[in-house]
Length: 390
Image (cartoon, rainbow, N blue to C red; front, side, top):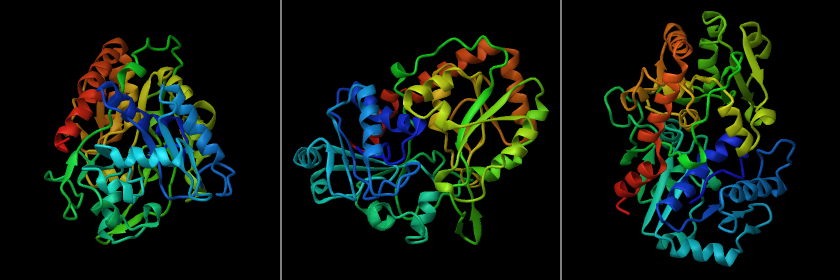
């Protein structure tokens, strides 16, 4: 399997990928992680795109943390070198694998992958991926190859857009048989912990600000999380005495900068994710030290009714932290009202926060129960493999 764990090093994104090998291994599978994106390591702060050392170090540390040291490789597009497992071993692993899982459309398909009977493409960015496919190469081109060629090279296609194919969901199928799935959580790594005793503890979230210009499709603009955050910027004033905090990063410096002064004037605590959650360990501690989560979603997820649900929010739930999050259509697939609250309006967001504050212990228990029933890694991945005929 492969993803963007090293290329885009961040505590939360790392966990999104780490849950897969951990949960597959717990099911008894022999698992290897191979990062082979065909992209230069350009997402490191201060990196000139020519040195993958920081990406490799981050990936190695993450794999050691979860007991997968020696079972990973990183192919560097700049030097042509293979780090971690030797090149020959990496090719042999790929050639003899029974299943390939390509997370986030990240991995370049090479000749050795052709012998793998089940090649799963897993779309973690629903509607964005399909728009790029429909627009025939606009935007995202992993590894320098077209998105259509990448999609065609896989035998099975899954998406975090759980509402795909449902009435009201605007994800274009593009002639692909997309099957719904969701983020697995390897629960042993994310135990429920006691809520913070400090009454000043905040409802938190972590987010990237504008990642770039909106996509255009069907004569419409399809934007990022900045659009939705601005709609709910005044929320702290609706729930006085309930602290709200956002750890905000800016991907690649693109787009307008985060309006920190405006957010703070509205009552938000603005944090630096590079300080409070730069790696998997501190990311987990940040979530577990929170009162719960309050978050918005990308405009495109909401507007298209995708049914997308955040892996970050699932990690809050696993930790016994109630979640109040914007509805993308996910409320059709997950329970709401105990431990997890959907909102589309300011009033609904405020009501969810107030409900958690009124009965924190009850909602903490309900949050963990939702994680166990709906996000358990074994349950999610057994279904994925069954749907892929593996």
